[in-house]
Amino acid sequence: MHDHHKPNTKSEPAPAFTPALRKKIEGYLTRYETKRSAILPALHAIQDELGWIADEHVEILDKDYGLHRVQVREVLTFYTAYRQKKPAKNPIMFCNNIVCCMLGANEVIDKIKGHIKKYEERGMEAPFSVEGVPCLCVCDGAPAMIVNKDRHLKVTKDNVDEILERYAELPR
Amino acid sequence: MGDTLNKVKITTAFEGKPNARALKTYVDNGGYTALKKAFSMQPAQIIDEVKAAGLRGRGGAGFPTGMKWGFVPKDDKGPKYIVCNNDEGEPGTFKDRYIAECNPHMLIEGMIIAGFAIGANKGYIYTRFEFFEEIRWLEIAIKEAYDAGFLGDNILGSGFKFHLDHYTGAGAYICGEETGLLSSLEGKKGQPKLKPPFPAVSGYLHRPTVVNNTETLATVPFIINNGAAAHKAIGTEKSPGTKLFCISGRVKRPGVYELPLGYPFEKLLNEDAGGMLPGYTLKACIPGGSSAPILTPEELKGLTLDYEAITAKGSMLGSGAIMIIDNTMSMVELLKVTVDFYHHESCGQCTPCREGTGWLANIMGGIAAGEGKKDDIERMNEISARMGGRTICALSDAAAMPTMSIVKKFGAEIADYIERGIRA
Image (cartoon, rainbow over all chains, first blue to last red; front, top):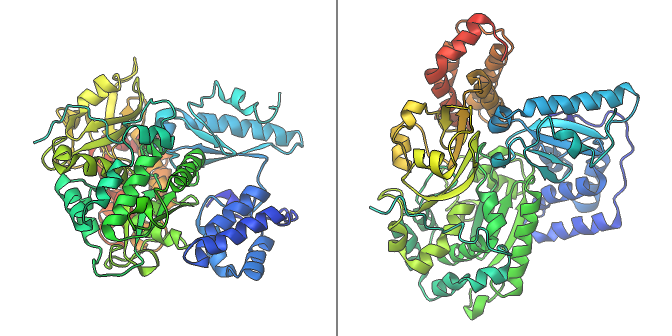
C-alpha cells in the first residue's frame, strides 16, 4: 500500500472547491452515459486543483453532486493516482520496474531520499517526496521519473540534482 | 508467405515528419481517405476485409481483430461502443504512447471505421493518467477531427454518427485488461469481469462493446486503403503485418521499431538497435513484456519475431516489449521486481492471484534480503503452478509464467544467493 493512501493524519485543513473546479465537475456529470463515470475525472480535477482529496471533498461530491460516498471512496482507494493527504510541493514518481531498476533507478531513488532526509533533519518541509511506481512505459528513456506532471528520462545519480534544482533548492 | 524483412511503415508512417500530429499533415498525406472508402463499403465487408487481412490484437493477446468485431450482434439496435485500450502498462512496453506522439489521427480514423463496421456511434480512448502529454495530444486531435467533420452527427455527409471522447485512468495496471478497463470507464474499481459474456455481447454498461488496442486500431486505415492482400503480403502467413517492437535495456539504440512480423530477433538487436553497449553481454531477454517467460541467449538464436515462433520457444510475443537483460542484472532482483509488481497490481478479487502474488513477493523479499530458505525455489514453483487458469483474468497467469521460467532457467543463480545468503 502506498503511503499516500493513508488518510490525512496531519489534520491539514481541506482546501475549498473553487468555482472553476465546480464548473469542471458539473461538466463531467453529464458528459458520460452515466453519472457514475464522472467519479474518476472529478477526483482527478480535485487533485489537480487542490493537491489532494480530503474526506470533506468526498462529502461534497456526495451532497452537492449525488456521487455516492461509497462509490467515490471505492475509486479513491483502489487507484494509486489519488492522494488522500497533502503531498509535498513536488511529488516524484520514480519508475522502479525491470529496465529502470537494471539501469540504476534504486540508486537515484536513494539519493533523492537522502535529500529529503536532509531537509527534515534541518526542520524544513521537504519540497519533494518520492515513491517507486510501476512501469511508466518509457523504457527507452530509462531510468524515468515524473516530477509533478513533467516526465524526465535517463535520470541518473549524476544528473538528478541538476533536474531537481529546477524545482527547488537542494540542501547543501 | 509475406515479406519478413521489408520495413513497411504503417503505424509509424508519420515518424519524423514536421508537425506529425497535426490533422493537416495527416490529411495532406492521404489521411481520412480510408474513412471515405469505408463509407462506400458495407459494414460486413469491412469486417471481412479485416478478417482476411489477418490482423491480430497488438495489445498482447494476439486475438484476431476481425473475429472480435464479428462477435458483435448485428441485429442489436444499439447503443454499441468501440473502446481504444490505450492504457499501456505492460512493463517494457512504450509503443502506444508513440502513436499518440506521431499520429493520433490514424488511431481516430481507425476507431471511426471500427465504429461504422460494428454499428457503434460512440467511442472512448482510455489512457493511463501518467501519459500527461499524450492525453493532451489525443484531446487536441479529437477536437481537430470534430472541427473538420470527421467526428459528429453526420460524418462527411454519410449519415453515420460517431462521437469520440477521452477517458483518463488513475494508476492501475489491471485496467489494461479489457473488462477491467470497462469497469473503470463505468466509474468503478478496475476489476475484471467474468467471461462469458464477452464485451462484444455485454461490455460497457452491459452493451455490445469492442475493446481494441491502440496499435491494432491504428492499423485499420492501412487495411481499408490497401486491401487485405497488401497487409497479408507483410510478415508471415499466420502473423501478417507489421508490429511495433519496443527494445530497451543496455543496447545502443533503444526505441520503437516498426518491423514486419517474423523479423529476425538478432537483426533487431544487433543491426536496428545497434547491439549491446560496449562492456555488456546479453544474459537473457524478455520478449513480450514482463508477463512473458524469459528466454536465454541459446533460445534466442535464430528466433524470429512472430506469434508462432516465440510461442514455440515457450514464451510469447505479447505487446512486443523486448527487454534486453544484461550481465549486470541479478536474476534475484529481476524476479523480485517482477513479483512485487504483480502483487501490487493484483486487483484482489481472486484468491489464487491476491494470495499467490503476495506469497511470491514475500519469498522473493526474503531471498533478496539474504534470508532465503533452501526450499524457497520449490515452493515458488508449487505456488505458481496453482495460480494459472484459476482466476477471472490473466494477471495471475502473468505473474506465474515469468516466475516459473526464471526459476527454471536461472534457478542455479537464485539457489546460489540462497545458499550463500547474498543480499541482492
